[in-house]
Amino acid sequence: MASPADSPPRDNQSLDQSALSGVAWASAAKLSTQVLAWASTIIVARILNPSDFGLMTMATVFLGVVMMLSEFGVGSAVVTLRELAPEKLYQLNSISLLLGLGGTLVTVLMAYPLGLFFRAPELPPVLMVVGLTFLISSFQIVPAAMLRRELRFRTLALIDIGRGLLMPTVTLIGALLGLRYWALALGTVAGAVATMVFTLYCRRIAFARPRLTGLREVLHFSRDVLVSRLAYIIYQDGDFAVAGRRLGQAAVGDYSLAWTLATSPIEKLTLVLSDVTPGLFSAVQNDRPALRRYFLNLSEILCIATFPAAVGLALVSIDLVAVVLGPKWVGAGPPLALLALYAGARSVTGLFGHLFIATRETRFMMWISITGAVCLLTGFIVGSNWGTAGIAAAWLLIHPSISVCAFTRVRRVLDLSGIQYLKALRLGLDGSAAMALAVLAFQTFLASTWSPGLRLIASMLVGAAVFGLTSWLLHRARLREILDWLTRVRRGGTPAAEPA
Image (cartoon, rainbow, N blue to C red; front, side, top):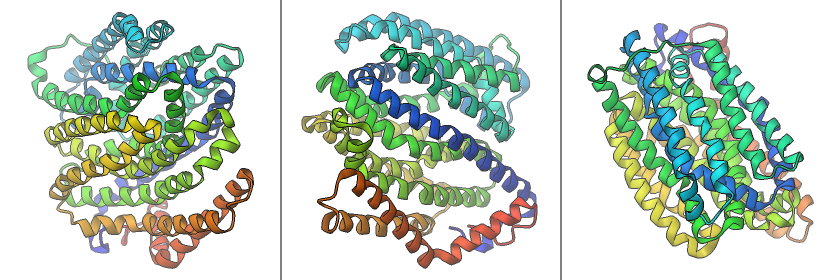
C-alpha cells in the first residue's frame, strides 16, 4: 500500500467516512442475503436436475448480451460525467427506456432461433418471459446511477437487501411447487421487479425527448463502455455457450452450478466494493494521489477478503460436492476447483475496469476487452475437448495474462510501481499460500482415508487456523494499523496514518 506520507488531506476525510459507511452498508446487505441465497441454491439444486440449470444457463448466455446493449453504458456515463446538466439526464433516462423496450423485443424475436441453435425446445418461452427484465430494468438505470454518484450507499444497500430476499424466495417456492426451470426464470423476473420498484421509490428522474446532437460526448463515452462490456459478456458467457453446444445440457448444468458455487461467495464480497467504487473513483477522478490511495486500499481489502475464500474452496471442492450436493452432481467437482482459483484472481483485477472508466480510459478498456474475448473464446473451444474441467482451465490459464496487460495501463494512469501493487496484495497472498500448503499436506498425509464429510470439516478448520496464524505473525503491525484507521474514520477523527 501507499506510505503514511500519502495520508488523505482533511478535505478527503468526509469521503473516507462515506466510503467506509458505504462498505459497511454494502457488506451488511450482501452478507444478510448470502445465507439465504446459498441455502436456496443448495435446496433448489437438490430438487431440480442439471438439465434445468443448463436450460436457464443457455438463456443467460443470450440475455447477457442483450442486457449490455439495452443499457448502452448509460449508467457508467451518468456516474463518471459529473458535469452533465439535468436536462441531459432526463434525455438519457428516455434513451434507457427505449433501449430496454428494444431489448425485450429482440429477445422475443430471437427466442425460437436460439431454441433451435441449442437444440432445446423448452428454451423459447423461458427467454420470452425473462426478456421482460430488460424493459423492467430500464426504468431504474439512470436513477440507480444517480444514487451511486451521490454516494447514497445506505439506500443502495437496502435496495439490494430487498432484491436479495425476494429473488431466492421466489425461486425456492417455484422449485417446491414443481415448476422446474420456470422457478429459476420467475426468480430472475421477481428480482428485476423488486430492484425497479425500490429504486424508483428512492430516486426518480424525469423523462425528456432525446436530442442526440447534444449528447455526442456522452454517447461516445457510452459506446466505448458498451463495446467493452459486450466483449466481456462474450467471454464471460462464452464458456456456457461452448459447453452447451459441445458438451450437452447436463454438462452445462454441472458447469453452471460449479460456476455459481465458485463465484457467488466471491462476487458477494467484490460487489460490496463494486457498489462503492464507481462513485468513489468518480469523486476523486481529478486527484491522482487520492485515486491511487483508494485503488491500493481497495485492492488490499479485496485480496484479504477473497483470496483465502477462493483458495480454500478450491482445496475442498471435491469433498464439498460429495457431501453437500450428492452423487448426481459429481461432475461439478473438477471445474469448481479451477473456477474458485480464477474467481479469487478476478476479484482483484475487477478494479481495473472501474479505474479505466473513472479516468476516461475507455478506449483502452474497449480494446483489452476485445482481446480478452478473442483469446478466451478460443481457449474455451480448445478446452472443451477435455470436458468442463478443460473449459474452466482456460479461465485460469488465459485470464491472468490479459490482466497483466491491463495492469500496464493502470501503472501509467496512477504512476504506480509493480512493487507497490504487490505489497498491497501481500496481506492476502501470504496467508493463502501457507494455508494451501498446510491443507494439501493434511489431506495427502493424514486424511486421505477419512470420510468426505470429516475431511471437509477438518480441512476447513486447518485452513482457517493456518491462514489466521500466518497473517498475524507476518502482518500484525499492518492489521493493527488498519484497525486504528477504521476506528479514527468511524469516529470522525483525523486519519493521520491512514491504512495505505
